[in-house]
Image 1: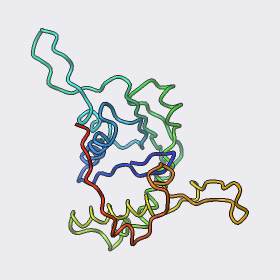
Image 2 (image 1 turned 60 degrees about the horizontal axis):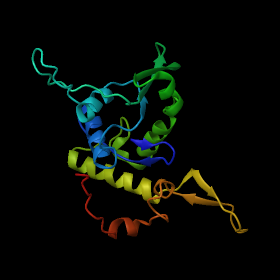
Image 3 (image 1 turned 60 degrees about the vertical axis):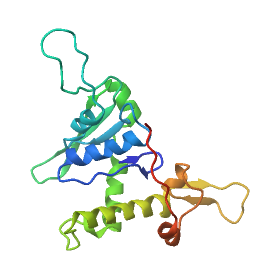
Length: 213
């Protein structure tokens, strides 16, 4: 999952099914600043994300005193989730897209999320360029889940902290020697003040993640 304004990768999920992977993503977000409800989300038309939202953030309705007490979690008000469903012809070529609001008020959700998954699709391409284990129909696939997760973590770290993006360039004022200052996603998000080197990535000691509880 990425934050569209800064292109920062904020969470990842690796599992055998999309629902399980999405559940890991939302559990990470819940620990890192969204304890009460999921962040506004847009995705393609594949299923699993709405179910993961309910499993992680859903609430059991209060018992009203009649019948059996409820045990199943339900979505909560103020959630915002939008799907961009791709429509293809018999050859698999994209011919149209359709917006489907899963949670939230339609006009409000579309206005906030914009109705495009271009950023996440672009970062998927970047991931395949930087991580050979994700290349489709390639020979660099992972045979062990632990090694696959380790490579994904390393690639995310390099992308967030060490890889400047052209779209994040910041105009420099008062310096005739250069017009633009390159920025990484972490710099754009205010998490870092410089581009990290590989040496820094391998030697800086990271503090343990704190719990919100």
